[in-house]
Amino acid sequence: MNMNERIAAWNEEAQNCTCGHDHRLVEMQVYLEHGAIQQLPGYLSKQGYRHVTVVYDRFTGPAAGHEVVKNIREAGVYVDEICMPENKAGDVIADEGGIVQVLLGVKQESQAIIAAGSGTIHDLVRFVCSKMNKPFLSVPTAASVDGFTSAGAPLIVSGVKQTFQAVPPEAIFADIDILEQAPQEMNAAGFGDMLGKYTSLADWVVSRDLGGEPFCPVAYRMTEEALTSCVEHVQGIAEGRDDGVTVLMDALIASGISMLIIDHSRPASGGEHHLSHRWEMDLMEAGHKPVFHGAKVGVACALLTVKYKDLAQKSEEPIFRIYNNLPDASQLIAWLEQVGGPTTTEQLGVSMEMVEHAFTTAHLLRDRYTGLKYINEILNVGSK
Image 1 (cartoon, rainbow, N blue to C red):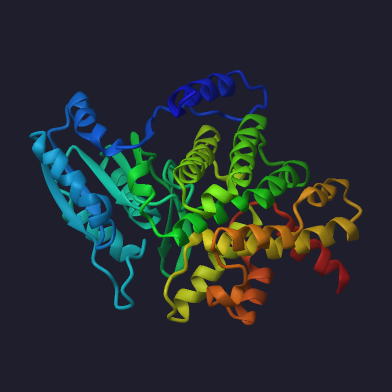
Image 2 (cartoon, rainbow, N blue to C red):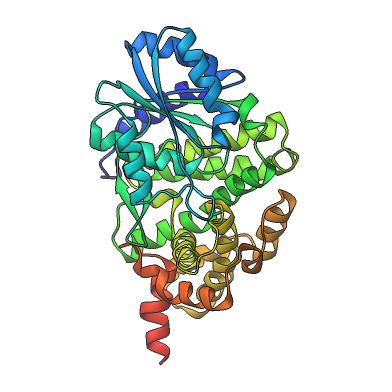
């Protein structure tokens, strides 16, 4: 089955799910194929869009944005372009300044906004689309995160990483020809984001039993299958091959859809993401260049696995035995190294002080029950 057929099957399964969680009907067209962006002009015509805006940056413009604009114009659709400016460090940041730049560039008569880029561009566009009530279309330029299909927009506001409910894309045009050209470090980041599902899925089971949080077996299985597929194709991903990049992007999209179906990020974001968010804020405060989200998540997952396996031995809570099923940290590190991603906090530019800070405060960033929360609020408190 192609992705659209699988979305239909997941929708049907979710609507018949008896977990008690509110499920969301996912209505999204996914074009995951060679030459996918060639489908964009026809899609716009079918939807009746005659005026659109394309958002990119100085890297994603040459990678995809410029060709998207050219193809759309040749089809007779009016196009406005926004090339996102960089900050003093040479980066585009999903913060208040970035939001304003997109808002200023989108005309009221524009009928849809197209994000041509990776995670940052998508987060800015999805947030602006939600505020301006305009359809959001996605053109990923790298298989780097699972947030392309997400409705949540992680943004830095007043120096704090927060996720805001926005809108998912109406359609996603994931062109394998474009994704294959992305730097391998971006594939490694996408793979790291997927490896983080090991701890996020385990944390979700813990949150169900100890935190009384909603749990859906359909969304759990979707994410688990996507993760397994990536690990089984790690060599193809490491070599940046056609089949490896396709599997990786497919898994990232599936992971994003699992979050859409239950309207929450629980399947794909646990303690490892909280550590990553804390490191991101600390690095930004220290004036460091941003590090790929998935790169941080992969390293955080390996470090957290050590803590979680230790917790499974120390605690008498039966549910923590699920952490025994996690791959050993050495295996996670080997996979990260195989795909060419960072394996240590030093490689991320994260100091030991930042590591300690994250492990003692990251659980406060989200109102969610995780093993990390238990370690800080129950285990460590009880040992004092």
